[in-house]
Image 1 (tube, rainbow, N blue to C red):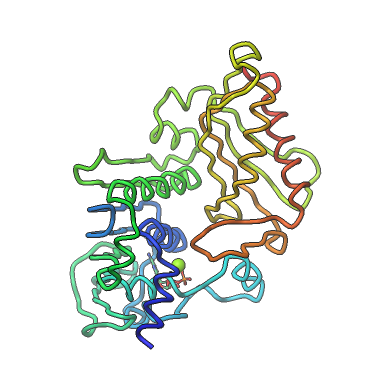
Image 2: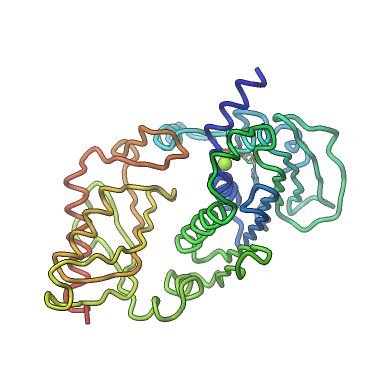
Length: 333
Ligand code: ADP
Ligand code: MG
């Protein structure tokens, strides 16, 4: 059973960035407005996510790392969404099978914080009292300590840290009302967003004012189809067919959220790059926030792959291209 759990956990958490994503989503689910992520040695030595969210009640501290423990399955409607995004109540359990996990948490009405350490989904000792502010801190040490093949499969601490920074960046852009901090301990400056509520403010903090200059908002204006699109283009520049040689080879950073979850869709990225290329436009950063009926997205792959397919792919791509084209018209310099 233990081996099976470890294998399953290795599927859910393939690299430190997967764990970071899950922990950030938990903090957001807990309505945190400040989230601090710390990573040492690419997250393999230490990964910590601290939030000021609603916390975990003392009575739940014992069970939160057990498989299928979730406080988030309430309505039948949820099941549809959950089905489309794969799994529930697996993140903490999985991490606790491949790392040393400890939790410190305090709810608003608790007189103090509680802390507990876990191994293989179970508490190592009873929950203890401790000092702490309202919110939750999840500490993950020695990730993959019991999975030597996993650690050798990972490229390098630098690559893992870059992946973590990428995840934090995406969630920070998508949640501009939340202040995110990423601490890298000498392996790079801290990343920090103000939590002031606007996407351009978050992008300015993360990418600098040059990229964030002249941002263009995207929005579906016409009759609602089966999806709603919002987003931003960061400083699109018109090169012109001559300067561009008719073809742009500058790749843009592409951030896609579907129903609040960061996902990958290579074909959609290609469709957008093609549009930029035919318009002789370069755009360093594209951020899309798509709300779509979950029955129309298919995450056929494993949740960690984050790879998504649309049922009406052509229609979705065309609409997205249209929205971007509309936004570009008249504002490209
Ligand atoms: P899920 O998020 O799918 O419910 P997880 O394994 O990620 O499963 O988390 C298990 C449970 O632990 C959550 O349902 C929630 O009740 C609690 N939890 C985890 N992280 C936090 C957090 N940062 N703040 C408050 N509660 C949390
Ligand atoms: Mg979760």
